[in-house]
Length: 257
Ligand code: NAP
Image (cartoon, rainbow, N blue to C red; front, side, top):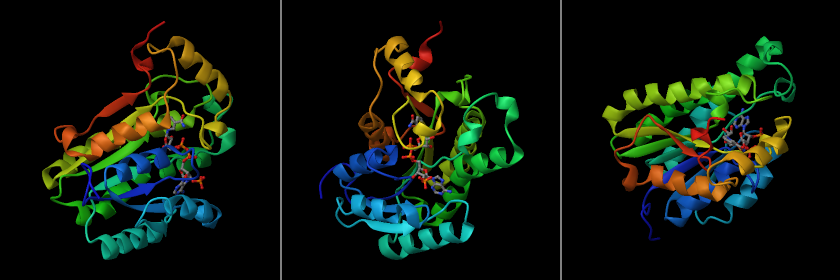
């Protein structure tokens, strides 16, 4: 297979269906020759992830609910056995209970706060730790997905904004830890895209309309545009970039009123 990621391997966490940002990232990486492993959370998603993975030759499909340390261990062990090494991790996993993604933020429950942080923020560190032995010294790259609700108040995004702020801070700390070991860590701050998770945020259609009106490019972005940046961050052209957040949001983050 040719492409600037030929002979490289990667693992993609967070494919739910063909609309998932993780799937667009997977396509972009595979198009450049990367061999991929996919993980899914729970039996409910296994069939859908397996049928998508079949579209990419030589893929591996493994269970990995990021709230279960034993499943993360087992997934990375299998990846080590099958691939021998790892160059890229795409972390596109997030969750908050639906009732936390509406109304006033101050109603956030302790359970909702803890769960959203465990799945959406802590899991990056948990996964990075497991990938270290397979990635060390290979000029590898870890990429996660975030949203501007980490820095600005976005109505109804609520506790997920706090979790994304923790995720972005984790990117910086992990970049400092793992840089000397030849691993880069970055986040892509994507504009809103209609996916399964996004449908849990109340008023999501209005967010899309707002971006189409107010962003410099006067449109929304596509998952494929995120996938392209993911392949850039995985590849040699971004070798000097780590610890940063790259915006793929039609420029919306630069706007004031
Ligand atoms: P998606 O297709 O629903 O993907 C989210 C994935 O996270 C799903 O596969 C989901 O599985 C998985 N997940 C949830 N809990 C998990 C757990 N305990 N262990 C492992 N996986 C778990 O939605 P998406 O929009 O593509 O989201 C991907 C990433 O992009 C997320 O970090 C999201 O916050 C971020 N992002 C999205 C947007 C947007 O507008 N869509 C914008 C900026 C950033 P289940 O279906 O089983 O829960």
